Image (cartoon, rainbow, N blue to C red):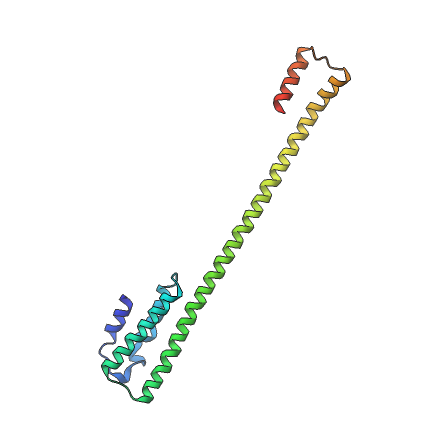
Length: 168
């Protein structure tokens, strides 16, 4: 609103012949301020801002005196070209924001999948190491008990069995 008001004040004393020419510099610039200021907003707000700028300029033009048909046609073409570039820039910015959001979401998903795979691989490796360690300590104990080389009545064998049970 302040940008539009500043534009109106800056060009309020111009005669109709100077509208959409160099002395009416704010019409060329104010739409770009709207595109930049409303960058993060929906496109409709930018379109509304540019539309308000056009309506304000048209109201000032009519208040200053209606131009000739030829001058009015030239002003209309100039306004359409200027506004088309501004709208195109706003649309491109929105598309780029959408592409950036999609790329960011894809990157987050890929990172989540990589992290999940890495965590799974580490858990699997830890389990395999744990089972290998247990295999090295429990299998000889079980083989000794099954083969009769170890006596289950022996206190050292019982403590060893209790220790391995606790580890399992």
